[in-house]
Length: 428
Image (cartoon, rainbow, N blue to C red):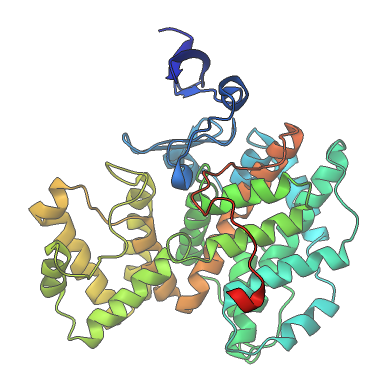
């Protein structure tokens, strides 16, 4: 294959270099296009065909249903690794040795105490505030308590900033939920592992002993791993473009949280539960709603089925379906919402319309079911997504800064008015 692409503009041919990635993906390098053509640019709304960067973190093949972190399959990582191992892998490039992992967690625990003044900020929010708005605000507020910027040329400074946010973020997540529920804020238990501590901080009641459920711990560990990174999605691209201005890590993460909040992104698992609630209110007839989903003239859309990127199947959904079955079986939850979810799942897996179009339940569908069964409020689902995505965002921010990428500055195609004379106000 040629190492260049030829583009003809206004009768002139321009040779553009081809760049090949390690998985044989090919990109046309258009950096010099505007200068060479006297102002011609490419336009790609939503950046569906535009690579914003070169990255060595996550490989995703939507046609084949492949997801890998740093070369490791998501199936192996979800089955054999803990969340902190995966976080270390994403951020620093290799799976940690036992000594590295022990030090990583010890350093995270040492940096996990959140300044008590942050509690005052939490107290200032009404209970009705959306948890994602609270989390984004609290993450941004950490900048005020850690005002020095990260020296990206110092490995030690980078490492310290990583363990600091990895330690404090779960506290903010737990406080966000406990504030909503009127529970006292908890600082956690340093004797527990990372995921166990998250659950205890979220669910410990002040008047009873907390009892750990190992099946819940394993399910959450898998969920966090599955959500840890997903290539250049909306929130990740936001973190990178904000960080490209040399904004600090906490500010960049806060922007990513806000991007994740949207129902077309991280809010998808919340949208699944809201859909299930609506079906329940209408009588709970799953066959009726599957028929509505197949009717192109019906505005109803089945949430949690199919995926924008995965055209065959979502590899994460296969993994988390098993965990969802284990959680529901262990907890023995009697919940009409979960019964409706299981009915829709069975319909979709056997209905020719959905099978032929590969509209299988995706990770958002199963994660929503698990969070519901665990007793996590629906509007906290996206917060849990953010907790899982944290190491991916950190890794992407760190990579972008270490590669010294230029500030993000997309072009546009102007379609507004041409030059017009100014009219005095009495003549308008």
